[in-house]
Length: 298
Length: 238
Ligand code: SF4
Image (tube, rainbow over all chains, first blue to last red; front, top):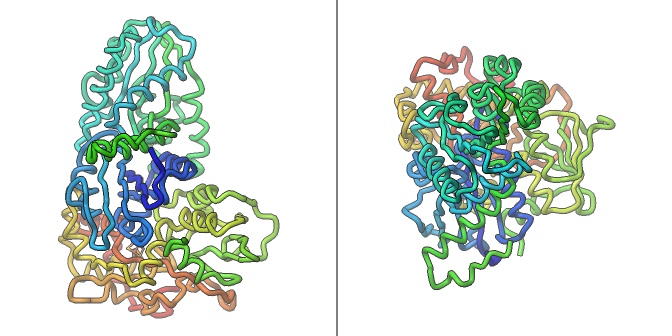
């Protein structure tokens, strides 16, 4: 994307009042994009953390920033992208002109971008490098029965796209709370190797504890931590070792199979590229005549 | 050209100034940041990268996650040295996200203030029920939840409703005055260090307060119980 001296990028995440791992990937991607100097300003805002979505109305100086690209750091469209973000940020559609003249461009959520497929493939390859793909099943895991996001459909779409490439012996979408269930992975797959990639924006209880438990690779200690309630730094430090370890101990050997478990896709540094591309895609769709200028130089 | 945010920060720059619980010392354009209680403390952990403020601000002294960065529980024992104004701005934005921009908007008379009732009435989903809170419950829950000594260091600019009713009669007048440094309520007798301060402004009730109002309506919060005394030295902010 060409650099814009009068444009800002706002990355909007969910954030959390209990999970300290929720917002860091969004902040990291913002810092990386800031470093590339593609936008005059790069900011973040969160539903559950600061700055709030309402604070975001004041983040960019209308004198110097004439347009703001708003990219939701979400896996899919849903309640937050369709109801909460437009309401809190007073958006009237894809393009909103503020009374101060600033133009806000509401881009699609990161998870919707076609490049997400490449990123999932790359992560799967990295986590199990040297393992023949033809003898490997790949599981893309989402929450399922999540009223707020259509992440189940998004995981299904990604699994279909990867399957169509014919690289892996099998590519499946699986869910924590609805069929096909993650906990059935041994029945769902037949290959000697299985790679599991959580299709989430950040790590947290789901990726550190719930999915490992469903896969049968959780340590007893991390199960205890869950009942401790609020997450504290001491727990995070203790369990951080435990939690980090779950990704270090690959492959997990279960019933003669090798299971490779990856961190949530949203922690991949490649997310920064996709956030930028999502902003570029907005312009190429809204102003097709300007599309030629939007050649990625990232 | 510096943005209004940089200009507002530049205008506030004195040799030493406070931003929430942070003391910023300015020597010829480079900056040393520390917890305001730590000015004379020796050999704390020293950092030199603005991004490290994210980790410093994440947990309190006891290691608990800090969901509200303007809560008066910034951890002690660190020192952050920054070479440029741009880095200072970034670091302050990690410590107190969005507060510099809101301060700049306020300075430029661009800040829009939203009353609590309007925020509550706008909610959907699980927070919709929060609008059922009574005026009396609001008076108490705000008085408890937002108080500077144990809740939050921001100066409240918003009113309870469109009739300009004060947000809570249980908080002292200083809580609503941007010229007052909220952190002085944390000082012991005689410990106040003279410094100018950039106020942490609250232009609209935060999501945490909305969540607390919801709990009150559902009978899951004790914070709406009456506070025995009105504000004053005995209970209010000390
Ligand atoms: S509503 Fe404002 S003053 Fe009260 S706790 Fe939230 S941020 Fe602090």
